[in-house]
Image: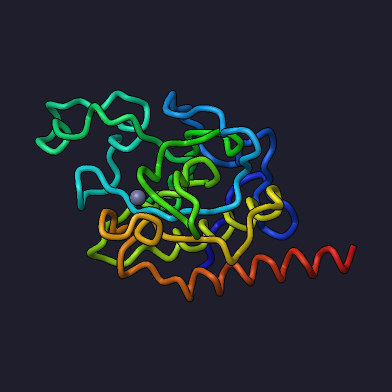
Length: 207
Ligand SMILES: [Zn+2]
């Protein structure tokens, strides 16, 4: 089965980024963001898992949470979380749809209390990517493909990012957060990401 690539592609299959927005992503601007602190550019990618209600897929609730429009009466869990002011830069749904809430040069509110290699407040210097899913089951093949495409685009656009600086939320908030969970296949993701890089490198040699 071939997976159709995201729109507006480079020849390599890597989507373009302009003015902080990813081509081909559905844009749902979130108010839950602000400027990064001075001297802080994105140098870390954080992978998350999310589903609303927990364990259910496909509803409008993640968009609603990230835009402060979650109906507290629509589900008991929503009554607990509807006042959270949170966001991420990207969401990759089970279908492979990519949604962007915050431009990459602004600070999204995805990591909470966190630290990476001795630096606290990871929101200051990271880009957050949510995968629609739970700790309890594998992510979809199309989500890995989209993730590799999006990360390859980000690596090309933001020179302080690196394939070595990609963490799970559970890595930067251990004991507090468990996402993207034990089923997230880091080896498979890095294999696909390497393929994106090789394709891009090959193209640059050829042209
Ligand atoms: Zn998370």
